[in-house]
Image 1 (tube, helix red, strand yellow):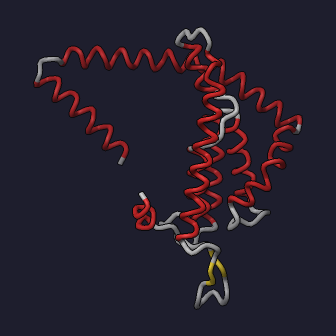
Image 2: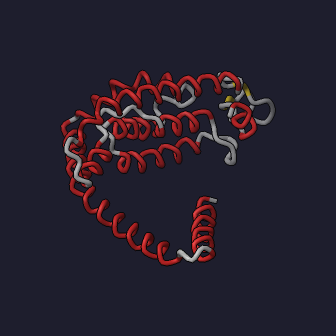
Length: 220
């Protein structure tokens, strides 16, 4: 769907520019944007490599493990439907740790692996469970102690004080994370949380209630 949206936007821009005789501007903007994208990516490499290296050092030294243990009680509260010894917990903790350091590129693979593990607990493959919705919300609105990527972008564009956004980013992400958690708790209550027993074939088996698109759209 996203690919079709982008294709539609590109085609609309080209047709609109051609109809107004500005096709040359579209061509120049396309090449200029491509050049800027490459320049920004190259500028980000050094900063991301540096922070990923520090992340690796922290992992080897045990700092990441200690950070994970520190946030583990909060994670267990946020994901009460996930067994404590399930592999998804480790990926969720890694994802949250990377987001705390503003390493979105490093957090994404861990988030994907966490979703894959959570899918194994999902009795209905075409409907997201409350845990999957919680992970998505927290990954999007995560508290960020050091906005590494944004600092790198500001440095790349010649900002005189690229780290001035640290305090404002921390405040904004605290507010966004709080809003995400409140919304998550509210939707969980609406979806008949905690888990209920499945009647029939399973014989007393329990499973997490499903968050359907209808219930999400009602609160939107």
